[in-house]
Amino acid sequence: MAELTVSDVTLGYEGRAVVKGLSFTVESGDYLYILGENGSGKSTLIKSLLGLHPVMAGSIQRGDGLEQDEIGYLPQQTDVQRDFPASVLEIVRSGLAGRCGLRPYYTKAEKTLADENMERLGITHLSRRCYRELSGGQQQRVLLARALCATQKMLLLDEPVAGLDPGASEEMYQLVDKLNQEGTTILMVSHDLQAAGKYARHILRIGEPLFWGTKDEYLEWQKGEMKDA
Amino acid sequence: MLETLQLYFSYPFVRYALIVGVLIALSSSLLGVTLVLKRFSFIGDGLSHVAFGAIAVATVLGVSNEMVVVMPVTILAAVLLLRTGKNTKVKGDAAVAMISVGALALGYLLMHLFSTSTNLSGDVCSTLFGSTAILTLSSLDVWICVIVSVLVMVVFLLFYHKIFAVTFDETFAEATGLHAGRYNLLIAVITAAVIVLAMNLVGSLLISALIIFPALSAMRLFKSFRAVILCSAVLSVVCATAGILVSILGSTPVGSTIVAMDIGVFILCWIVGKVSRR
Ligand SMILES: Nc1ncnc2c1ncn2[C@@H]1O[C@H](COP(=O)(O)OP(=O)(O)O)[C@@H](O)[C@H]1O
Ligand SMILES: [Mg+2]
Image 1: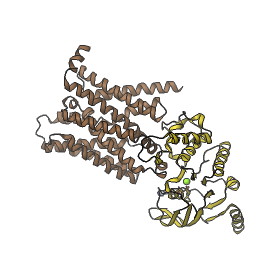
Image 2: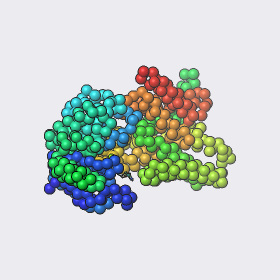
Image 3: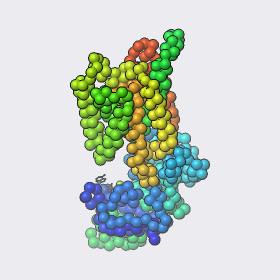
Image 4: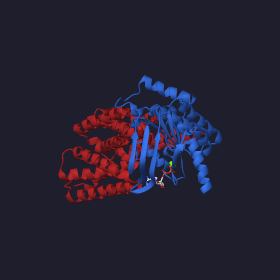
């Protein structure tokens, strides 16, 4: 069974549907790009996949041993406050908080995991620094390391390169690609068609019309759409 | 001056006041950082007014120990405020304003109508500004205070990492298996408990100052969560101790003296923060 099976889902708020008839699957190790206009419901979909927002109709099923709290998440940047006093190490380790139940401290193994994830993302030298004083690209790496502390199985990234300069964006894409090569399933919301062409295995388009398929199918389909227009 | 202090310390009520003051300052400052960062400080303000209303009711009913009534009522109010505050921001704000002003008005009305005291305005003033309450603590008050504040600190230490995670990013915490709602509830309940305690020290109108100032001061100076919490605790305890001593020596009102210290320290920290950032 696939890690995620989304069947005929309707998403929306307070009885008003935003997306209808959404169906797709995500296999283990997949790299899915989610494209769509602003306001088309991409972030809403992410919240529903995380179990934070109920679907109005249809179902989202998890399989392949994926638990609800094994889906890591990189929020759209606005969520984190500007004036929050927190060091990089504190934030990365906070990704461990969900897994320790009632235990009030982090074990040695957990701390080592946090250190390893910082190493993987090249932010070990920043560990004592204050989060809010880092550059946008560095902040995203910190949040990515935090997500990896919560889970290595699946990551949902909501517009991770929004607001980054081209160089930092490219680094971010390569990092995420590396994580995917190392076995993490990736779902990424983005506007960047070029990057999608380069890295995606599957593409999901939200909005009118809906589309889900492999990258090549998407490119074919897009050509057809253009001709129709 | 030292001799005067020595003399005062030979009185048990002065020692009680100091113990209670330090404990309250400590627990309120631990909480303050979280409340400020979660933009929850308005709840603290609302709750302190509810506590005032509850005290009025307790006085009217002639309950011998007010805390027994005030503590549960305030905790209940905290839970309710959190529930309503969840729907939307605006509604939550309005709900807090409604409850807090309502409790204030009705509380005063009740005291006015039913109080048998000959010095009503004195009573009201001391409830609002905590003028003498701390020097008239019974040993039961002291015990309640010690137990509750130790409880608050223990809970805070046990859940420190989770409170940080939920404070920093509620959505992420929720997604990765922390029940953010439960921790918000925990925070609200602790806040209510601390507020009821702090009423003894500074009175209900000044509680927010006790909770917020040390946190804001510490945030001027430090950049990690742990350092801010530690600094805020130290500042709060120092200000409370100094405030109590000054108020005893100079016979000034305890609550406002402590808050004046907090404000002074905040200004100092603000300047130091500005200068060192250059
Ligand atoms: N909390 C909310 N309550 C009501 N409507 C919302 C809420 N969040 C988003 N929406 C609406 O749902 C639609 C989809 O939003 P969103 O999923 O954030 O879009 P995207 O991430 O694709 O830009 C938008 O029209 C938005 O106005
Ligand atoms: Mg979005």
